[in-house]
Length: 608
Image (cartoon, rainbow, N blue to C red; front, side):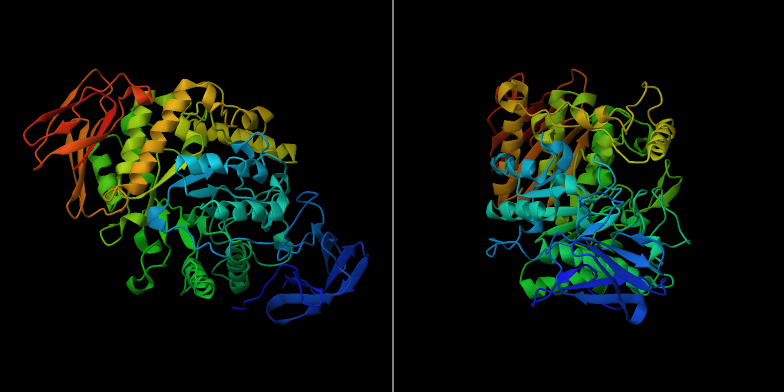
């Protein structure tokens, strides 16, 4: 495989080098504006074309003409200020004054992640709008933000998974320099940045890469479009394209880690999988910069091969999301049994998700009608990111309801407490920390109205098997879907918001500072069920915590014996009036042999 930088790069003498992979072309010309240039590029090995040009400045628009016919934007464009169909823009991504030389990243096991969508996180819908809220997040205790994809997509409103220029930062959010400013400011405030990237497909509009080369494979399929070619003819250079993309984000934008979207839709039967190559490249970069970079996969396979070391036959990624934790806790909290929740809903499954991250680790799934998953026995707790909500689980509902709107205020507190006492890396979904009740919808704004119509019809079909009994869904292409998905904020004016925010702040403080909770050790843990109640015991050395949780939604108070030796003091009670609860009824101190009463939809945490 040729390792080649493929986006325009400024050289030391201020010339720019242009490189494009176009094996399908017999000739390639660079067409530039201001200055106006039409220059034939030089052919190189493996289908590459290159050219060094003088007199080009940042801001110059350009396109590539193929075989003297049509011209197209650069597949590795760094900027598309006029949209996905128009000329690319030359920018110098090295022309930024970084002030984060002392930054070394947050250890994965100490991360408190916070997933946000740039367009709906603030009223501005920009990176500047995120910067304005960083002190708020730091005060909450968040030390890592995860941005939904920022690659250029068509239109103004989109989740980001329809990106068609993986190297270009969406101009509506502020573009490349504003993203750099956000990352630099985060690092100054002690906050890491993880970027969601899509390496399994391109979006449907403005996708011109097939005119240049064999970017797609006809051997497989995905729900979102043609899969990328990682194991067929000319796949080496497709791999280089995405490996260079990952390196650019971490090396040039100082991104601390990448969340890899739907790796189960990345098909590669080469001797060395693209995921393994990606991990190797970031390991090399880490050695050069003396800073760690993290790769976290989203997968519906429950396959630890992605996060196992190379020596154990794995791909060497650092972590992956645990959907099983979400499904187990959601089904227990809401009693939903449709769709993939058909497989969940028992207390034993939540216990297993807490203890092992995967519920389905070689078990038969009624929903999937097959056996799937494998054991996490040899994988540590920090390799699994857990959550009770995220953009997918909320936004792919017919009405975009958040957990608090599907259960109760007290249940939402219990679920949050359960997440933070579990031995994994916790992730919040924006607004969850104060009990946001605005929905989060799926939204698009393609320039092609027919495409918008097809998206709307497609969503209606999807909902027929999951939420068909609950009225009409909002049209994803409507401005309403986007505007209603924005966070409401106004925390200081809403007592419920204030109490939930303070509750989350306390949970995060315990997770970060308690000597037991701060270590995601899934081996030093026991958990027992009592109906819909749980007793979670964790320890490190001579320090212990006990968490009593009652998921019963009836007026059923749970009685649990305290069988540990020694005394324990209460460090959190979700029923406290501090958190807008009905008031504490459990003792501040417990001794061996006592019976603890746990209110419905409540969590108590004790420690020695």
